[in-house]
Structure formats: structure tokens, C-alpha cells
Image (cartoon, rainbow, N blue to C red; front, side, top):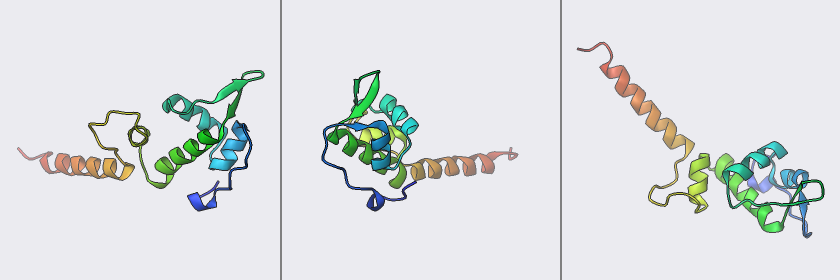
Length: 117
């Protein structure tokens, strides 16, 4: 699997891409793309012949952006949705690191109060 945005191959100039091609271009497996289709409403592939998925160039770019937000920047699915402008704008996006820090502070608070009456 690819490790960074710089490792991604250039996108060929063609009209439609299969799910396998998009997976290679974005550095994710096809089952991940199918999951992201459910989670990100902006990701709308075309279905043709035998219910096969085909993506256009702008959708390949969107998949790469989602990958960057989730894998490189550490956003949660909800945070990535918000960053892409699909979620509630009243809250700022939450990264995995922020969630971990919040959980650690809760754990410290619980540890400090347990057994002290």
C-alpha cells in the first residue's frame, strides 16, 4: 500500500475508471471505496453494464482527498465529512489525535476520583 500523497501515481486522461483503477490511483482497496461511497454522499460513481462501478476524474480526486484526510491528516469519518462540507458546520472537524487526547483526559479524571471518598 502507498504511504503518502507523493507516492500516488498520476491520473491518466480518460473518461471513466473502474473501481480497481481508482483503488490503485488512490492507494486504497476496492472494499474501502465501496464503504466510502456509503459514508460520503459526494462520492457518486456511475453504474453501467452489469451494475459495475465507474468513476470520473473529479471522483478520483475526491477519493484521493478523502484518503488524505483520513490516512495522512488523521481525521475521523465524521471529521472528514465536515472538512468536505457535508456535515454540521457548527462543529470543527475532529482528528483522531484530538479524540485520543480527550479520552486520555477523561481516563485521568476517572482514575483520580476512584477510591477517594
